[in-house]
Length: 269
Image (tube, rainbow, N blue to C red):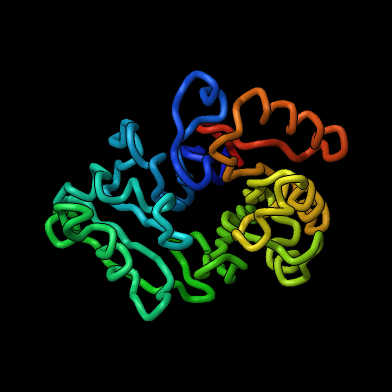
């Protein structure tokens, strides 16, 4: 069977990376998703999931595009040490919305500057191009649409479409209702929805305004927008495998096509 998109979840943990035996099944690496579609290598976010893989397998064409939702550190930590960016034969387009009057390059340089980091983007070696995030653009044959998320400081939600298959990546999103009209219109009928669900309903009483959704709210939104399959992501760093499995089981009794994303898993669409 021919698959339009090949996706690998490289990191689905929120806020900060975690490690240890209780985090093995879902993984402790922060936000990063690898997508292969239409001959393009597209990477969503540059968290710690960007490290520790055999990248040669994914770069036959020495070209990739990095779509970054926002520059909070958990989404950018993997960027300064990503091996292909030190290869002079690699070209990489980097999309990150200008915020607080800082361009994409300026935001990344803020992290990669002394005393925080010794290497800046100019000495990485690869041919890097930095772009603001427009409402719509294309990466080869892949159509990209974007909308602004509800998150402190802002964040971008991405929709990637090719040959009738579409993926919506909506991490760091705090919706204002269980069926937000703008998001439901944006994500309507998508093949796969990757949706932030960091908190439980109980936790939300003291995490309101932090910029993240709850598990029941995100499951309800997935149903409201008619997503064919939904993976809940950006798991809370303190949430263990056994806790996530129990929460997932509870969700699946109500929503058969919703489950929790696991670091390292592949999805063929």
